[in-house]
Image (tube, rainbow, N blue to C red; front, side, top):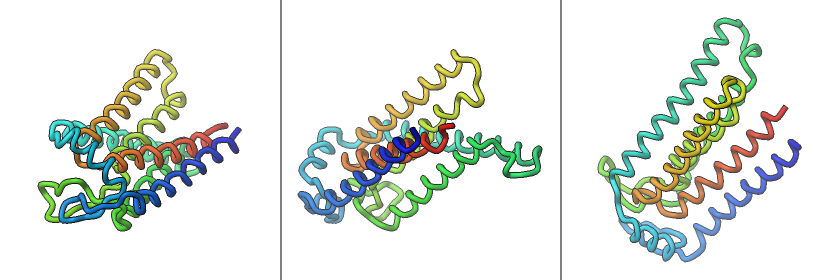
Length: 213
């Protein structure tokens, strides 16, 4: 069973790199700010022109990003409390350590694509003076990974099925609103959002394989 998860995760990881290759080679044109070159230029420009810039949705997704970081902090605090009480890191709940590893990987991917620029944002942000990295959508990746992994960890800490279902529904809604909101707010290209979704699936499926007992 675990092997199946890792195979699916690997396939999505390969798809992610294929997607990068296509973005860098297919229908590339200088449609970004300050003449930056963007792949899938006709598709990206069409979608961007359709939704335009929506600051309200941008702020909503920013708040959801903060919420995701708070969830990470909550699990980190729980792990710290366990470490203090139990004296050994090996005594900390396995799922907490696994979540920590997942969060580290997300941070690493974010850092890598801040340096390895695949796409630049469709707009220059108000607090910036030049185009910023846009691929993959870090908000999409962060929130999808954090919320999906939270759903997977629920069974360990919440025994009440009704409460677990409510939290699960909230997590799913947060992911959906983030994906839609990040697209319609206009700070990412359509291909950035797709890239964020693909890498999120690769990470979460791998996490499912690791956490399966």
